[in-house]
Image (cartoon, rainbow over all chains, first blue to last red; front, top):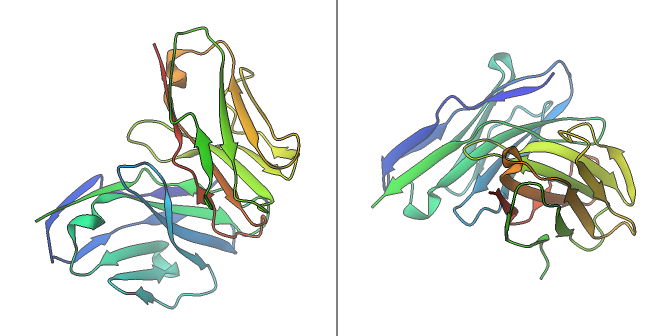
Length: 115
Length: 114
């Protein structure tokens, strides 16, 4: 069975601080995909990134970066120089490579960035 | 619009009533998913369609839940004899195919059962 754990329920930072959101996953599959989604107060889940299990290279996109460590089953997400608009709930998710690509989500981390 | 559209945005029903939630996926998207998101939780899978075929309904919590996608485009999630524990946000997502392409989500329908 697949499981995603986001141990941080809520994080509060002040604008311009860096913040890291943790994600630990469990799967018996050798090939799988990992995702991060952002859910602002409007409710829509916004896709941020997809990584496959064979690609452990870290990725940077603007102020966002992701650290995938297969050895520790972690896929952490860092926002550099946070902004108020980053305030949202962030979900880490996992899907198997085969089958229907159903997403297994963590419980989410609420990020509050204050001015 | 170009995104996934869900209606209604909010639905309030009395316990025991039937409700129908609509999802209009992105045009051309083969795969369609329904998820249920309880307050303070992550979305949980309900069911999956590939075109008009419902290939997985293992996440539907009871036989009161029924989903269809008769023409491979718009999908409806129906809940019969609603109960208070059905209160949640129901999210629809679509993707180009099932090969782990990113799922694009709608804004969801917030269902409240009184």
